[in-house]
Image 1: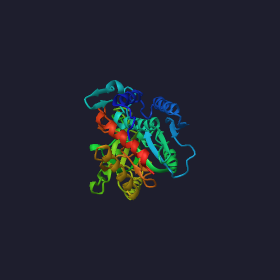
Image 2 (image 1 turned 135 degrees about the horizontal axis):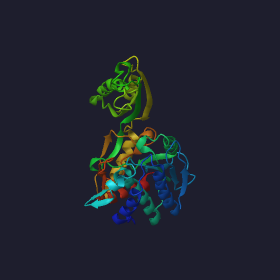
Image 3 (image 1 turned 90 degrees about the horizontal axis):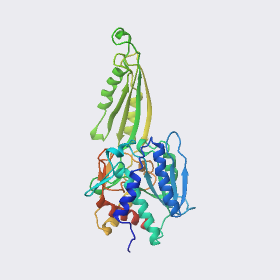
Image 4 (image 1 turned 45 degrees about the vertical axis):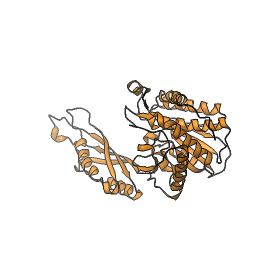
Amino acid sequence: MSMSLPSNEDLLAGIRRWVEIESQTANVAGVNRMMDEVEGIYREAGATVERIPGKDGRGDCISVETSPGAGSNTGILVLSHLDTVHPEGTLEKNPFRIEGDRVYGPGTFDMKGGAYIALSAYLSMLRDGVKPNLPIRFLYVPDEEVGSQTSRPIIEAAAEQAKFVLVTEPARHGGKVITARKGTARYQLHAHGKAAHSGSHHEAGRSAIKEIAHHVIEIESWTDYDRELTLNVGQIHGGTTDNTIPEFATARIDVRATSTADLEEVAARLAALQPHDPDVELSLAGQINRPPYKKNSGIQHLFDHAKELAAEIGFELGDTATGGGSDGSFVAERVPTLDGLGVCGANAHQLDEYLEISSLQPRMKLMRRLMETLR
C-alpha cells in the first residue's frame, strides 16, 4: 500500500520549528510554547486535545485522543516528552543546521525528532484515510529530563487505557530499539556543619564539605559493574567564601541498577550513613525514581512484530538494553512497551547533538505501520 508520507524536506522544516523553540524543563514558558505548537497541529487535524495544566514549577501536558470514548486497555499510547536539557541560549551555540546526513541543534536527537516523526506518521494515516485497529492516544509531557515528577501519575493513568505503549525516545547505536532499561534513583545528601573564620578561628569550624567528601568516596565505591549497579555523585555544592569554614554542603547522587532489590539496598545504605565528624549533621532526601524496565514476553512479542514490519520496510531492526531511564520505565511492567522508536543520531545532552536524516523515513514508516497493524 502506498503511503502519502511527508518528504525529508517537510520533516526537517517541522523539526526545525520545534528545535528553535528552546524548551529546557525549567523554562516553563518555552515548554508551553512547544505544547502550544503541538496542540495547534492536532486541533487542526480534528483530534480531541486535553491541555493538563502544569504544577510545581513545570509546564503543561498535552493528551490527544484520536478515538474519544475508547474503553480501558484497548489502545496504543504514544509517549513523548517535549522538554530538553539545554538551557535557553544553547541555540546560539548549536544552531539548527544540516551537515551531510546530520542535523544539529538542541533536542534534535533527544527527542523532538522522534516526537515529530510519530506525529507525522499519524497525520499521514489521516490523509490516506487509514483507520487503525486500535484507538491511538498521544501524550506529551514537560519534565522527563528531570524525572517526570509532575507527569508520572498522568503517564500511569494514560497507560491504564493502553494495550501497547510506543515511546519516541531516540534509537540506540545502529538504530536499535530499547526493550530494557536500568532503574534509577536520585538522592541529595546534605551536611550541616559550623561556620568559622578560616584564619582566626579555624578550630571552631566544622566543615560540611569535608564531611561530604568522606561520604563521596564511600558512595562511589558501592559501584559494582558485575551487578550492573552504578552510583555517581554528579554534583557537589557547598560553602560561601574561600575564607570561611563551610557550614553547608550537598552531594547529588545518581543510582542505576537492573533490579529493584539493588535500588532498595542502596537506599537503605544511604539512609544508614553516619557522620564522620559527630559535630556535623547529615540528612538525606530523594527516592527511587524509575523502576527497572525488563523485557518480558509481552515486550518480546511487540518487538518481534516491529522487527517483521521493519524487514518489510527494508531494514533490520535490533533491540538492546540501556542504562538511561525514560518514561517507558513507569509502565513497561504492566503494558508491553517498545522504547527507542525515535530517530537515529548521537550525542544526546551535548552541544553537538544531532539526528541522522537517513533515519527519518524508515523510522516514520515503522511508527506508522505499528499504529496501523497492532491489534
